[in-house]
Length: 448
Image: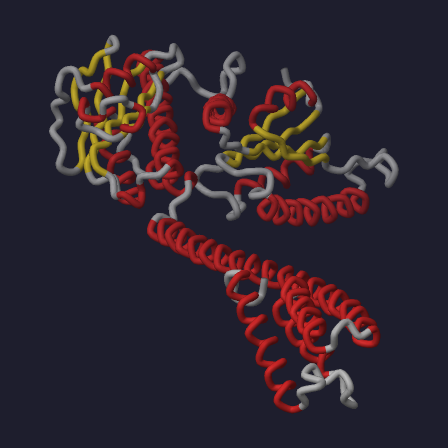
């Protein structure tokens, strides 16, 4: 109810007192007609309307009963007064119905208003919580603007990758620079046990205590593990460890992180550290293997020997395999953009254009191959999604369309190929795919 709830007995007491006062005043005015029934205005209906509309039907009936009792005392069962009482009883029910409907509607609007105020309060709290979360995330990404491509390219541009120690030092240096890894080290692993420390950064003891639970679990399960993965966190001195596995699924190195700022200790940052570490050490192992082969064969692995596949093609395929593994393990995609033509003139122009193109970054790789009478150009974009490659591909397409248009006109005008006509001219075929579909692409172009 919209009125302040009070005891029905108290309300009935108030109504009875009000009725007695009306009767007393009426008796003082006219002792023969205390309820002023014979007056020009029907005061009884007025009193009943006021009480019923203010208190409700029940209190209106109590007043009507009080008037009826008074009528038997003062009017001695007058038939005329009886008809007036019955008429007034009808109005009491009418006023009571109006009171109920009015207050029902008022209660609905009050409930709705309370609900809207509650929802407004909840949404206000949610908005401020979201704003705080957004500001926190924004601060994290402002502090840490580095992407996979940027961090890895920063390391690869360094020339000091001749030894495992060099690669370890460069890796830790970049992890500290971009991810604020304050204390960490990289250990050489041999036969499932820690052998020696390759490099360290920050305040960290390079000797790992025997029985450290986090390191034992990583070596046993051969996967990255967090401090929270342990049931008893007191059994380790570190917060994160990442293993590097060779092609035989044997751990050959492990990254151990002891200290990292709280804002950086999140799933996104730790995933980046994991991917960067494994990517860089795959690169080191590849370089070390090639250096070992060249040393044994006395640089006889030249590209001119027809029985060997060109080294740039080998490097391209190795990179595709590495990125395919990253896609499978971490769901981070990379894209391959292919250009197909049967024209040797177009092939030469495209090759010159792509070699000199400034749109490509350090990580991007380009290779051209010939399969039968087909010329294939492949561009690898590591750690780029289908949406992320759109702008770069659009710029490359514009350049290729311009080359194709100019060369087509030149070929037709100069008669370089007499049999070539407008109908027989075959344009470029272009598409981009995920690295997981690279083998299917080679089969499509009959390059296997």
